Length: 86
Image (cartoon, rainbow, N blue to C red):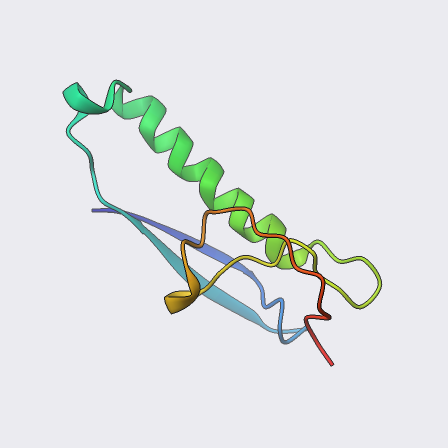
C-alpha cells in the first residue's frame, strides 16, 4: 500500500486541524501501463482533488464535497446541491 498523509484544516471544524490517511493499493505496473513515478503522482493528484472538494464553497453549499467512508470513492468528483453545513 501507498499511504499518503495530509494534515489540513478541518473542513467541518474551522480552527482545528486533522490528519487524513489516503491509501492506494500498488498496482501491477506492467498491466497498469504507468511508471511507478507517474502512478504516485496520479495518487497525489487524487488526494488534492479530494481536499479541494472539501474546502470549495459557494454560499452555504460545498458543491463538490467528496464521498467519505461508505458513501463511495473519495476520489470521484461528485456534485451536490444540498447545503453541506447548518
